[in-house]
Length: 440
Image 1 (cartoon, rainbow, N blue to C red):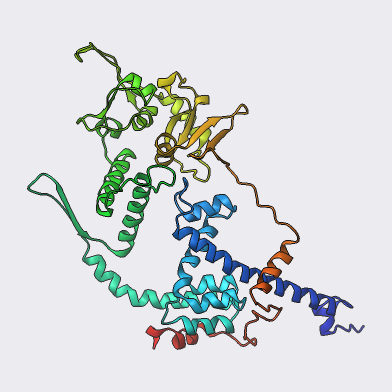
Image 2 (cartoon, rainbow, N blue to C red):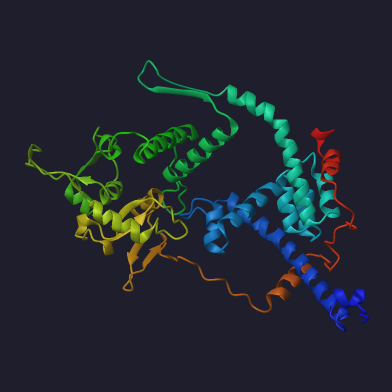
């Protein structure tokens, strides 16, 4: 028995070779248009990030992207990383904008590219497939790691931290950390600064913020407080480390009423701050006579009992502010208990420290709808949805992208991004020896 199998029969279904080739070209052309459009998207993300457009209750541009356009948080972080890297790499940015390099290649190359190596890596991107680019980038980073290993050992050996009291009672902090620990500390300080001093668009734009050095000091205090609260200290953090606020009942119920709202040392805090702290705290009721003398003091009670707190954490699973979801937080009374609101599960919502402050002191609002769902509003009254609706696109989205690229003068076709690879075996080691400046 003889079986005749031709190469054409194996590669394409009989009689459909030209049709499938045309379909393949259409796929390649559309992919090029999408990559060119992605370049414009990254430009917009970079501008949005730099101008702080995401700072409307979100911790980062990546978190805003994850909420607003339904990106996985990892993909959103990559978009922001690449967008930030491209201004220093104009050749790669231009190649992406022209559809000559795919976003996958540019994403990989920006992990290792520097202005002095950009040109040779651009040539690499044009010549290789995306998979080959990934392999070479991994090899490139291995060379970088070997070159940095000796320096990392030296840096690790020189680590030190000095904390000592000064003559005036203040405490001085001085030290040197390894890069990764330093980066961790800087990110933690940045997050704490953001929590304490997030930019305000609608409220008090004329107020002078503390200096960066002062903000860093306040952020370090917040980090220490948070660490102790989460059990690093072997004692009972809730008992040993606490802030005491004295506030009159009428002020707690209505911030416009006269009365005191001060810390234990006499420093005044706003009535809104006292309301936030009282939402989820230990409470001691004191009665005074008209002259201010203490007449009676009640037993300390928890605003939110432990059993109710466990139920709250079990139900909400994290901060309920749209786009947040931090797994730990504070109980917020939707209608404050000082205004007659009950301390019940239906009147509570779990909010992280940042968003609890946003609701009490920055003009954001939250209310529970008749169906039991929470609705958040910005200070201007606009609803902040859990999942924003997708924008409407008039016409065929593919034609919209193609028309915009053509209007930008781009002549894109199925061969625009085709690599120069001819099928030869890739020697990653040789490629690194030729391309990497430290391998020579």
